Length: 340
Image 1 (tube, rainbow, N blue to C red):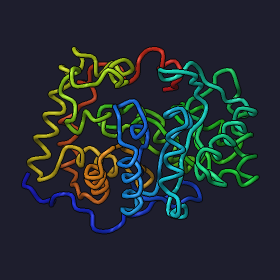
Image 2 (spheres, rainbow, N blue to C red):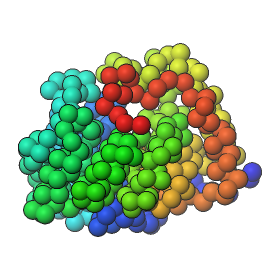
Image 3 (cartoon, rainbow, N blue to C red):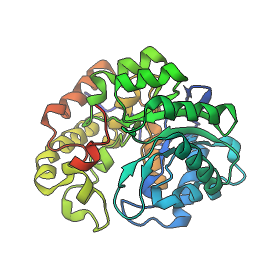
Image 4 (cartoon, helix red, strand yellow):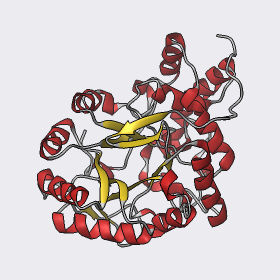
């Protein structure tokens, strides 16, 4: 293969995609890391990243009520002041997180749906949420109850569309039978491909957009993590993600190395290749990579228009075969809230 792709210098807004009635940039911005979990980010820099995203046409801003215990929603609300019409706010609810850690449970009952929506609207400082998503399924509450409450919020104009995250194909179909689900958010990347067993086809049969989170393997696929010792004490990859445990990370490094080498042959970066691979999975796929760096944001955004041939795509998958990934994508506790 010969280099043919120029360095990432996005000069024009991204192409657009559809999530139900919403028009969004082909790639969004995951905002989790702008508030916590991966280490400190200067608030002014975080706000600059969000505004730069809008400049690039990265309009889908993905957050959740538990990110920074609400601080992330407040950050987004302030950062988009005067630019609300350019932003498509996607926030999530359902995880109960009274303290540190990733949460202690999930609630999807109708009362909590309404309560969460009002709280998010207040923190964001907006009169409606564009995409409101159940983060994890509440196994003690029928999904029909949750979706019924979401549909009522949509009718009331509190939200424009709603989605589900990390649910199985059967749950997705049951939910969609109550009211149209606009988006499925789940982990999808070169090293997390379980969605391809059933969920991709199930989503497409129902006309549901797919919003992959952690499309860069939480920095691993971009070559950003070489050792567990590089992760700060507060970095949740240390305690929440087995793939970053020292032995697993060491065993996984050849995957990142092969992807980086292939990117060099193609005249681009590993991050762009990993994201472009997802973009080539279909026009209904809108990844939401996160970053706290304006320059990395530009690099990521440019992947949406990176041309790849069938041979390139095959080479990318050969570089990171899913069978060679060591470690589960979440720890045992977190996996109990995920349907696969």
